[in-house]
Length: 178
Image 1 (cartoon, rainbow, N blue to C red):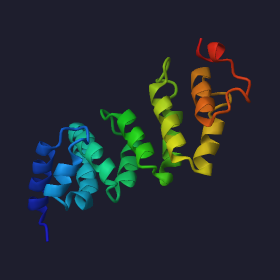
Image 2 (tube, helix red, strand yellow):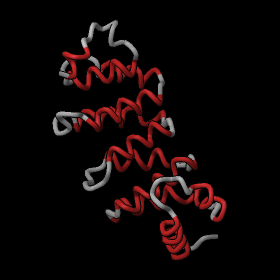
Image 3 (tube, helix red, strand yellow):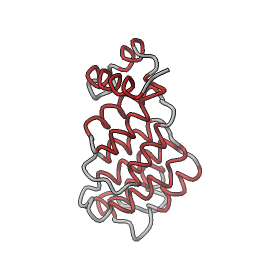
C-alpha cells in the first residue's frame, strides 16, 4: 500500500531520475516497476499544480511504458483552459501511443489553434501526424475534413499528404506551400 506522502516522494525520486526524453524508461521501470501504474496520476497532479516541466518529463516517461490512463490524462490537459504547457509534445504522445479515444480531442486542438498557429502550423502538423498514426476510420475522416476549406492551404496540404491523396485531390505542392 502506498500512502499519499510516500507516493509524492516516490514521484519526486522518479522525476529526479528522468531526463525528460523517455530514453531512460527501462532503467527507471526496472528500478521502480510501480511507476507505470502511478505515473498518470502524477501527471494529473502536476498539471493541476501548473508544474509543466514535471508534466513533460512524466509524459515522455509514461509514453513508452504505455501507462494506463495516460491518454485520458493528456486529453484532460489538452481540453483544459491551462496555459504554459507544451501542446505539441502532448499531441505527439497521443499519436505515439495510438490513443484511439483521442481523435476528437486532437481535432479540437487543431481547430482551436489554427488561427494562432500560422504561418507554419506546427501544432496542426503534429495533430495531422498523430491522427495518421492513430489511423482509425474516425481519425482518417478528420484528416479528410482537414483537406478542405476553410482550413489554410498549408494544413490542407499536410493532411492530404498524410492521407496520400494530394494528387487525387489535385493539390499543387508549390501553390499549397507557396
